[in-house]
Image (cartoon, rainbow, N blue to C red):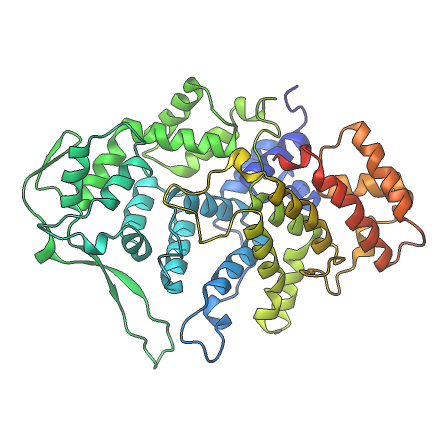
Length: 468
């Protein structure tokens, strides 16, 4: 049965395009109805993000460079804290699309620069995004384009920009790859030196080397001339197939697997007609009837990010993190919960900044295995501070979560509402029985941790909770 009420649709909208549907966020986004929620979610530029940690302030005193795990924790902390959830969700989407891994790009400042580029153009113009990511130092290094020179063209980037970033498999020839590779010759990376006077970190920059560029005639996908790399990228963006390829990937990520060809073509037309404006295209998806159909509801397996970050936001770790930073506490201490979350996501199969290959993560049912389910179920202990290892909530007022809920049924209702969980009646009975068994005294902080951890452990194990 399709989603009925604005609140049901709003929760669905935030599960997919946000970072979970906390009760407070639902109230905020739905103040002006569902259409207002779409506008509030997408028109985020004027909203204070609520995150002000400079990653270079986290660099250990004796370290020459910013450690990569700190960059990862910094990004996760941003996801937990941000008041612009769509911006971070789209940054994650583009990180998977333009998959670049720190396993090869070991310079943390390069990975950080790319992360900021993805964020800057997250819902902007795809042509600008593609151009800037293609010239991004991490991408140039990742796909060996700094080795692409006249007379010895390296085809790695030319192949992937067609196969994975724009057209998809089967929509170009080997000759197109070879010719495009020559167009990208001379694209390289330069590193600035650290300026000790203003204490700015060194920065890698795009560098075009004219002497290494092949300026002869080329023919790429029917376009001929003394083509440059920019010419090829613009031609790829102008091709109708690119709009369809990107639209299909957006629908697969945010609506449901295997979207109908007619749905893809309709969204692709919006994408083309808007001059490849990402925000306009996202709004078209958000306002489509298909997005709220029963085919779409709880139809996408949660990524590790979608499993971990929303539960932290729903418990209110974002405001706690912001408040910790505002007190002037060492920011590295404020980021400890984010670092713990990153370790858990890695164990669930998704180590941010380390996609498995240039195609990104497999996704879908690939997220679920016996090993990753152990991590998903065990996340409850970390959330409620009852585990032996990664505890998140030192000083967290767990007892306040239940807002006077005293009976086992009230406790279960509170937790299923808090975590936006869809639980069928039979499984709810099991949760209530479990809460009754664990509730052996007044609702103290320790009792709230014990009951909360036990009930959510069973909740996180349900098949329904694996889907967004």
